[in-house]
Image 1: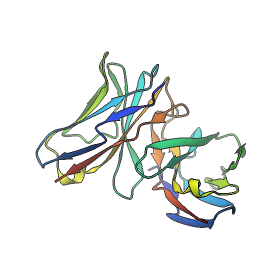
Image 2 (image 1 turned 90 degrees about the horizontal axis):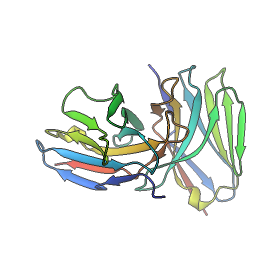
Image 3 (image 1 turned 90 degrees about the vertical axis):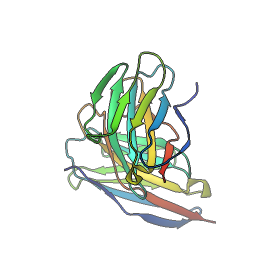
Length: 114
Length: 112
């Protein structure tokens, strides 16, 4: 059973471009969480999704950021018109149900905006 | 607002015990967690403790929870070089536990 798969592992974008980060949850997991880790900071919650639904997006920036978890395929975190401050590691976690006790994290996508 | 504080660095010798401390602010947290992050890797859940417990032991790991002082600690017995990593303390932001609040992490360095 593969773990949570995130790709790409590293992503470089120029200012103004779009970044798409993908997360494939573990088999049997229908709950996905996205976190952002800025340099020398802890992880900050961004959004919690179930299949086809956004449950909690209280940590998402109001503009340029969006997330989806379609019926088929991976969850996508999209950042439009990236700026240097978006440079960070973005981690995805998945769980079979609600709650963090069974959440497994992926290896993260490191986004660098140049 | 909620906040989780940790010391940033800890250095120990191989074979010694390591104690990583954490303070949190949200008294309604139902679970408190310890995660390990090795260089370039994701977070690995090490252990968690339910808020009505004082202590949890799992092989070389011992978690102590002082709810009155909102203090959580992780003790690693017989620390090995492979334990070198960043350790994050986290609490749940809501009753459902669907959002975690992480500390900035404690970098544990183990020398032989």
